[in-house]
Each structure stands twice: as C-alpha cells, then as structure tokens.
Amino acid sequence: MTYHAKLTRAMALLSEQPNAIFMGQGVLYPSTSMSSTFRDVPVEKRLEMPVAEDMQMGMAIGMALGGLLPVCIFPRFNFLRCAVNQLANHLDRLPIYSKVGYRPKVIIRVAAPSIHPFYPQAQHDDDDTGALRRMLRTVAIVTLDRAEQIVPAYETAAAADGSTLLVEYAHLYRDARASQSTTPAKEDHASWVSSFPTPRA
Image 1: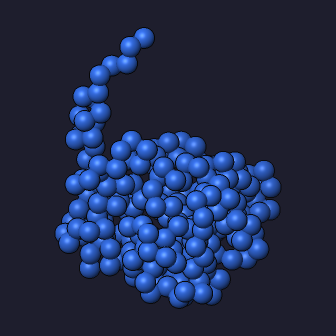
Image 2: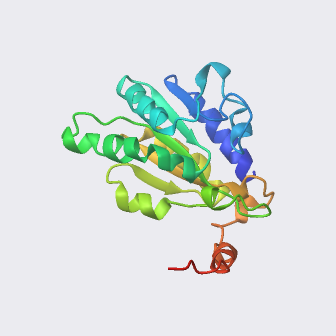
Image 3: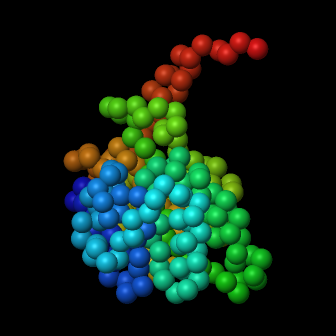
C-alpha cells in the first residue's frame, strides 16, 4: 500500500474509537492535501475548523479533558506554529504542573510540506520537528517517513496515556513508491535560499 493509502487506513481505524473527533481545516470539506485521507471517516466525526489554529488546539485540549479523543489536524507546520502557545504551554506542560493529575490525550497530525515540483514559498516550506523536540517535554513526537510506519504509529498514539504529534511528509502523499521513500532532502531548497542577495546593513 502507498503512503496515502496507509494514512487513509489509519484515519479509518482511528475513527472506530468511540470518542474520536477529527478537527481541522479540510477535514469535512476538500481543501488540503490531507483531505482525501478522511474519506472513510464518518461525517459526524469530522469538525471543520476556521483558520484559528490557537483556538483549535485549545478546543482539542478541552475536549480531551472532557473525555474525547481529538485528532487535531494541521496541514503544514507553518499553521501549527500558530498553535504552539496552546501546544507547549498547556497541552505539554499540564501533566507537569498538575503532577499528572491531568494528562489530556490529543493526537496531532501535521505535515512537512512538499517543495517539489511546486515551491510553496517561505511562509509554507518549513519542517519544525527539531524545534518542537527541543520545546516539548511530555508530548511524544513521531516522524513517518515510510508507509509501513503509519498504521502502527497511529495505533500506538491511540493507545498511549498522553499526547502524540505525528509528522508526515506531504511529498509522499502522491508517490506510488512511497513505501520505499525517505525523508525529503533539503539541499535544493537550501541552495535556492542561498541564492538570495545578502541584505544591506
């Protein structure tokens, strides 16, 4: 099965959790590269969100504290940045400052964007996995650079005691050879950026 097919399967399996709710942009209405992976998720389990990422993460935390299993969708890292306040200061730290009295479980799905064949420009081309690894203390971070990792990783996230952030790679969504593919190289992007003229002082 391809990377995309495995993601579709993982979303269908997650939707079998009685308390699962899928929330984000492009969850109910097709608008992102992730949208088609929700085709087997019942419509009543999908909550389309506005462009208000900080609010979305805050809602997910509240839902988790109320007993739901939010699957919180961010099509690109650059959108997730807008929710880092809730992610780092609240979801991640709540188990620490409550002495594990509260441990909300949110499954966060985010993609490192494709930069080929169409370059989405600097506001949409980032992979913040390394920065979030340094920032987060209790939220697990899992990178999915091979198709066979996907279903087990989402099953593990669903069974975990705490929250998990799963990083996907958008260039693999359309790759028929995704099961053998690896994390995208950044050399071409770095070379392109280095071609910019140096700003004047």
